[in-house]
Image 1 (spheres, rainbow, N blue to C red):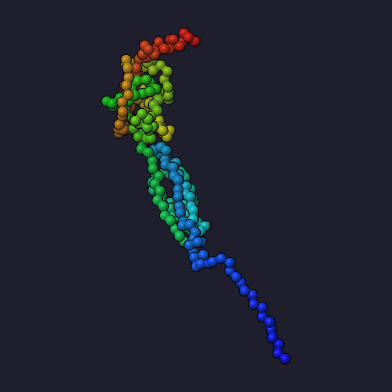
Image 2 (cartoon, rainbow, N blue to C red):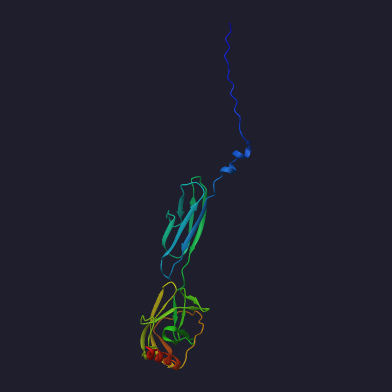
Length: 231
């Protein structure tokens, strides 16, 4: 008597339609290694306050960051001007190189005894000194600086100033300041004007400067007197 083993046949049915592309590498491809950065240039001439920060995406972590100055970090601070190169590689050995330049503004400059005259808002007049360099404000289609005498931003009665040696300071949009001692000759005039000023070379030493101050107009005085009477 022969014994027969019963075989159970199980049939699997795949629902849907599969193609070769369903398992292709393109559907599972990772984003390429990408390195972006933000930087801050140096604010004033001679300072070392530049910075760079990297943003790394894609590839396979962990990442290795190597700068040309030997630092291994995504952020650099207290940088001087120059070009910084970085190599970023991922766990698969894919690498990206970047070169980043940190810029520095030119030094602030003052030239005394210049034949050109620059309008001086704080004194309500003009001054025969040329200013340049740094990062001036771009206002009224011209380059502008804050100007001080003996650290005074606003001089209430400039017509009362006497001749003598003063500290003349200029400040740019980044807060950079250059101060020098100048021998100032004040004179009062009937009116004043403004004039565009080109950047000129720096001049070292004690300069002789003439400041022309506008007299208060009769109209302005009348307005002040009227305001005082109404109060």
